[in-house]
Image (cartoon, rainbow, N blue to C red):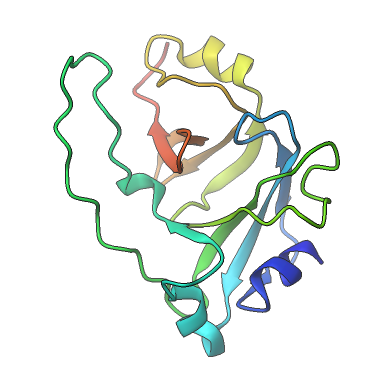
Length: 172
């Protein structure tokens, strides 16, 4: 119901897979967030891709992160806004608000993540991710969505502004 209300019918929840909905604190604010595997409704693509949509459309694998070792950062131009195709599989994320989390009627900060649904998608707490990838990790303050994308293990994580993909580079 939350996905239908927030996305106003522009996406539909995927038929049940193992599993298709995930709960965690993905943005690190102490409130429960919701992530759900969805598909874009072909009849509403203009709304899904619209610049005035009430959600942020992001392709996490194309998010450029600052160099943590550089004293001065060179700003790259932002990538072009991603475009969703008919029936494309996406990950919808609803950030929670206050104690009720994503169930709060005021919880409206939402994201559609393109090219972000892979194999073995599941929630992993930040302590587990830090323990496994400690030498490779970006600054991590949140739960992550762990999976394998295009044969590469890693996770989706909140940068503080948007979702990015972290590809694991071998073992610890």
